[in-house]
Length: 65
Image (cartoon, rainbow, N blue to C red):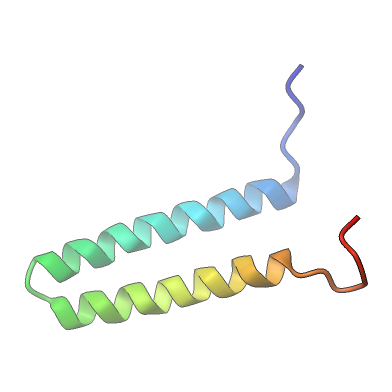
């Protein structure tokens, strides 16, 4: 039996997908000659995605279990 996906799981998967797409766009910009804008784009989107995922993993009130 397959359990339904909860909203936090779907949100996390959506953020990860957006981060992966942004990394691909940044790599494409980097390799097509716009290396500075590609680096800035990857760092900006990667930073936002990493910050969101890091903050969602932290426990605000004690232990995780």
